[in-house]
Image (cartoon, rainbow, N blue to C red; front, side, top):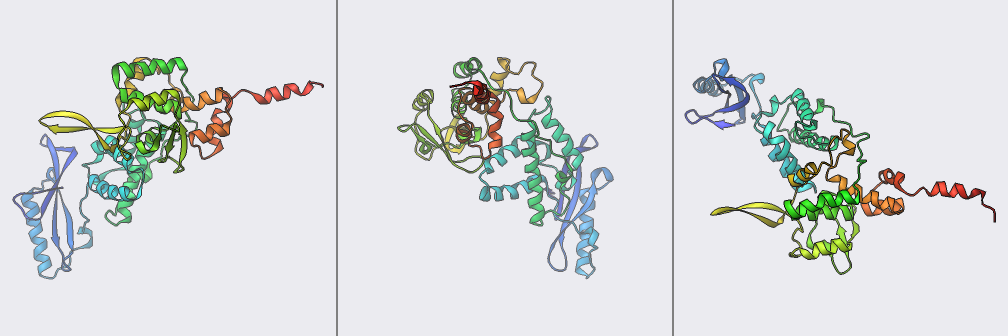
Length: 387
């Protein structure tokens, strides 16, 4: 919301969709205090409807005159502050930082997917139909091509932003996300896992041509089964080189577990410069402006996204060529699924696999059952043996 320079108490909002005389349309608002000294907002109208800042100022003068002479302002003219979604987001993020471990993911999802399209929009004017289109674009290959689960997270964040504003009585409209059906995640479990040859084919260009950091993050996921955010949350105090263990504390199900350092992982961690105990192992890259722009790393800033390097390498080597079913497409989560699949193929028990991967329910681990050596078949085959 922008304040006019010439007229007291007159504000305007610039539309990103409406046009007037080949320029973005403007909607004018006025604010004044009622007889109880309470701030009142009133929408006057759009420039395309003939409303100007001068006209809005005159309407404000009339309202001030009416209040001064004891005339009650009609209830239908009383409006709440014309907030844009960015205003609601700022309120929500304060709450998120204070109460949610995943506040950094909220920040990432808002800035990555929501801000550009809806950030400057008046919250009251955002419709369910627009969010339906937004959802479709997030899922489409021409758009963000996100998984159904990721789209659920984005829409869920947007719903929470509105709900928080409604609960705090800052916004009295209807939550537009409540009318949107979230994409189903039924039968969307990842089925694709990589062969050792495919892993080498993917990791080599990351190490030689793309990004050593992404190579290391991918390597950790393949050989520990850790989720991306669990890796991003690693601090040096979580890495016990002597006992070859990793203390995974910031987990999806909030239950800590232990991961184990293989010979290859030992070389990976030893090759990195060890920071202070509370420094992140894989910190977020930042841009430092000192004369020339320099990309550096802030050891106290947590990485929140895998970036484009991983997806670019996967595309360049053709791992997703001609793959239509999203369950068979290679994404970063495929690396974690590869870890579980390799353990199953080696004959490890489902209980061991579930514990190493941090599954809370056995149903999550059962997806690997079909890869385990068929001991049941061998057991039945031996029934005809006679001692």
